[in-house]
Amino acid sequence: LSTRASSILNALDIPTTSEVPGMYDGQWRGSGDILESVCPTTGEVLARVQSASPRELHEALEKSSEAHLVLRKLPAPKRGELLRQIREALAVKRDALGALVSLEMGKIKTEGIGEVQEFVDICDYAVGLSRMMNGRVVASERPGHTILEVPNPLGVVGVLTAFNFPVAVYGWNFSLSFAAGNANVWKPSPSTPLCAIAVTKIIADVLERNGLPGAISSLVTGGKDVGEAVVNSADVPLVSFTGSEAVGRVVGKAVQSRFGKTILELGGNNASIIMPDADLSMAVPAVFFGAVGTAGQRCTSTRRLYLHRDIAPHFLDALQKLYASVRVGDPLVTGTLLGPLHTRAAVGIYSNAVQRLRENGAQILTGGQRYDEGGLRQGNFVQPTIAIPNSAEPTDAIWGTETFAPILNVGIFDELEQAIAWNNAVPQGLSSSLWTRDIRHLGKWIGPEGSDTGIVNVNVGTSGAEIGAAFGGNKSTGWGRESGGDAWKQYVRWSACTINFSDAAPLAQGVDFST
Ligand code: NAD
Image (cartoon, rainbow, N blue to C red; front, top):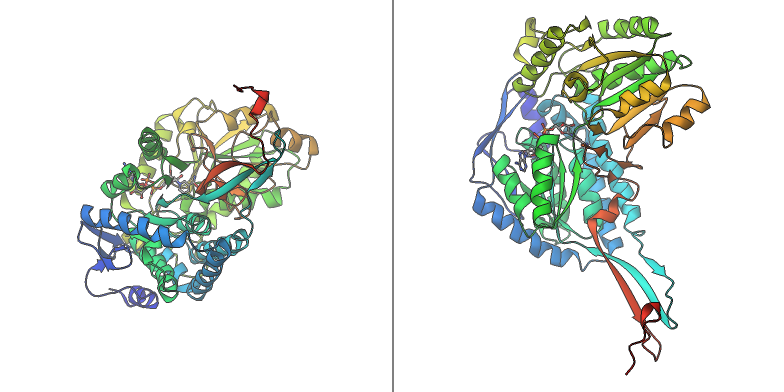
């Protein structure tokens, strides 16, 4: 193992010598398939992780169900105090964990650390929430009666996560779910097991120090089979799934068929619309970050750019200058802006998408190739690409498909209405962004004739959401909401309790059933 990789793993108490146990339910072990964690920058195998066998998975689910019985007895503000301790423990390891995200997933250092900060922020939020998960008192039509709406924990929440946010997405789910009183079973992406192990160790330490069962936050690494077992388990009333539309469709149907609950956070195909009155000194760098940041591997990455005809040549000129200046290389080196794609397979998906654009007569303004000179050859580095497809008609598959790579397709429009129609014409509905100084455009954009996505920004790019607002998308993005807003309400079971403290027992709606 390289010295750099060993020092990052050491700082997070992950063994560097033999195979690493990849499951935890109060006890670390793993006798299932071996998962290899491969560094996308160098191709180095960082670890061989022992995933959960079917029997171990079953045990983890059982232990988590038992752990929930303990957790549900703790008052919510006490759970908040535990979250405060987890927050502190995460903050201490912020830089090391951020470095591991860069090492294993491939995003640049500032984003790796930012991702851990997001978990810290959502812990803060959930600490506050632990004193504010309020039910309601509802006026009853019957004298001497009152109605309460009461939230109670669900039990065990299954959290299935994608590779591109290997820390934060579990953070969003765990913090709210734990504050609400649930035990959690985490099935991370098979290509980022080390991030999941590091996070679980931090949480487990706090739980164990407080004499609580570790299975409150169980970890089951593994591939599709392990994911399916969590999804199909009758012991998991809520499955929170973050990943592709294709897998989300399968997961959604499977959970629905056993009448479980889901939160689905699926693919995005996000557009920025630039009006002629936009401040281009802000809009151009924002589009650059949205399309090139994280090498186009955020669910909220900007994939479609709609430019008003009047400013299109100037905008594209300025944007290409920024593309030409991008510093590509090792994500752990300060100053790098573009790291690798996460896997070799993703490079193939990028190349196929570029090829399809070429075959369809698109103009490739910049990019379109792998970087294969010098040290970059060992990693999965691809050039960020700007293309003007032959047709701006959104029915074309080029516009309607999420390609998880830094490819930005550009269309030119004349009227805002046309751009909004294009924005809304794709299957996905995660994020969108309008750049304008005109309040009339803004009003239309955020209203009923406006953008149909879950995140609707104005003079802010498509990516880089804060934790305070509910995060998620509509249509084939799955309608799920996580993090802020009212997202916590999904992690509880609601009871409507009508209580009679009078000496009579009248029926509602005046129904008379007297003898
Ligand atoms: P993926 O769908 O390939 O995998 C997601 C998870 O599902 C992994 O843990 C995987 O092992 C598991 N899985 C695979 N098959 C399964 C099955 N049949 N049953 C149960 N689990 C199964 O996604 P990915 O490539 O890791 O991530 C990229 C995708 O995630 C992109 O589409 C991106 O837009 C999306 N994403 C969405 C959000 C959001 O909030 N909307 C956030 C991050 C990523």
